[in-house]
Length: 269
Image 1 (cartoon, rainbow, N blue to C red):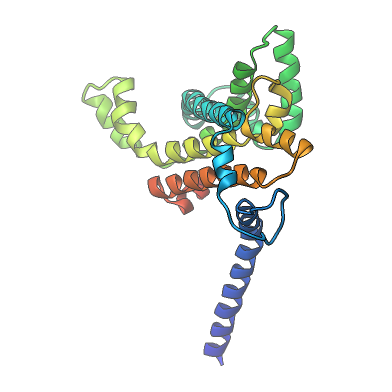
Image 2 (image 1 turned 180 degrees about the horizontal axis):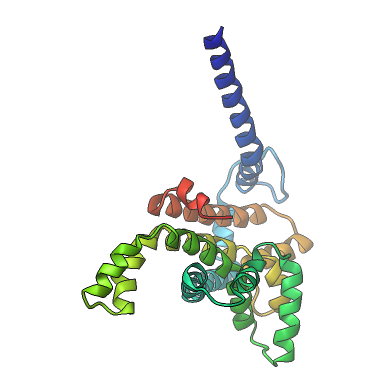
């Protein structure tokens, strides 16, 4: 009886997980299928198969320009998030100073604060400061959103660091920088890698910040796609979306390759 019950539970769990995966992945497969349609209008299932929409977007200078801008912003904001997030995480994890809890709440607030509201507030601040460079404004906004992920991941990793190794390095004459570079950083490398990749993925397709901080000259891919949807909806839109999906999956594979998806997920809130 117990054996039959265990088999039923395993069968039910397998069916349930399979159903959830199908539910989650179905829109992605539908988008992929529509991107190969040979008609001039989006249709599912596609009446025929062609790759001309991919050929079209790969020669479309507006899409390539938006893709390059998104890549620049994602890489730039990830680097800035690391430069800000790692020292901030060390201060929050090891510092003992008045207002530490309040400072931690402020740094991590973008994780729960609506990005549309944050983007509007940031636009008003940057406008009042006379900053009109859309690329710089977008970089600041994306860094603001990405940095908490680095802080969260690195803070969790720092709690697992063996402090005895750092004490031994300092006793042997290593200064603070050498101790961090050769002893602490290798131990928190999984957290740094997870935070960096999550920051990159979030920055690459961030639409809320782009709605407020972009302009007609500099538009990242998500904003360009939204504008395209308002004018014409042909299979080139699913083709562009498929390219973004592939890049996002590539980022997920990087996380799995570097630190393992389960461990990277455990470092996030």
